[in-house]
Image 1 (cartoon, rainbow, N blue to C red):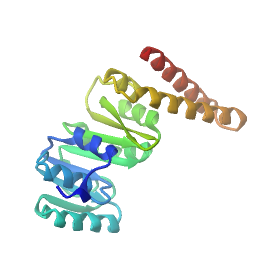
Image 2 (image 1 turned 90 degrees about the vertical axis):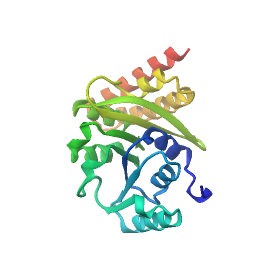
Image 3 (image 1 turned 30 degrees about the vertical axis):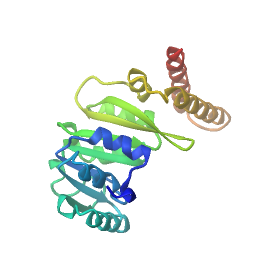
Image 4 (image 1 turned 180 degrees about the horizontal axis):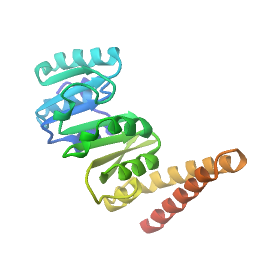
Length: 226
């Protein structure tokens, strides 16, 4: 495969979760590297590359042509999954966007609760996304971490139904992810700093309470690692 289309560790992790799909939709496809990589390696049969912006979609179309895969990829200028025939996809990837954005995309596509593999890579609001998923009939099945430089990225495997893990750290602990320790330290430090700001500012008691609960929860998981 052309090295130009090699995936970053974050996208490679997402691609690993998405492998085996009949029809994959890559929401916010950007350059289209993820579906191109999966198609070129024979790990999916066909793909939809969707993006809300014309520029990235044109880039994805050009890259697919360079890889000789144009006939296997459908291109959609769309907000999330709001395009005709989206419900025919049996796997959906939402990578590189905030947790609230991901929740909004899924909230407008309730069919994703029915037999669809969801691969989610939130850049923010991870706890909020996990709570939203559980309240809407989705279950967190697994999670993994990828390192790019000094940053750690979380990828979630989700589907509709009961069961699953409450929070990302629970899934990472069950998977014995080797990067869980550094990730916990990063999250605890970030939340503790945010909590200190909340206590000095005008944030609500509910927000501060959730931050304290999250720090306590993460410390408990860190203790379980020892």
